[in-house]
Length: 91
Image 1: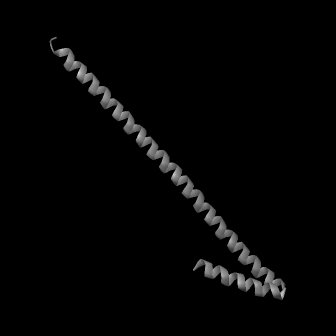
Image 2: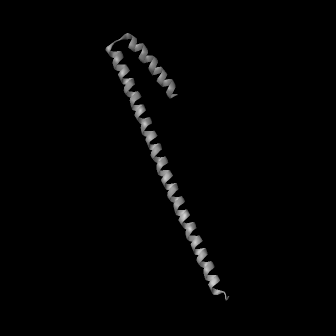
Image 3: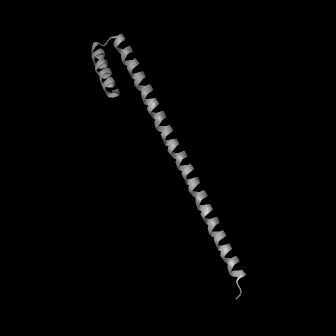
């Protein structure tokens, strides 16, 4: 639908530009300003998406690091428990 509206706007602009009137230029400028605003919104959404991906990536990396640290702690605890069992057995 947006492309259809834009195409209609461009056709209207072309017809008005052919007239070469000040009114036509004002209409074209209004459409250009609207198009610029839409481009700015698109850029803002792209930036927000990039930031969201980056933040999500950081959250996931931090979670993965925490899980790796937890796994290392469990391994260390297992090794200490093994040593404690080994030390408690008579040779």
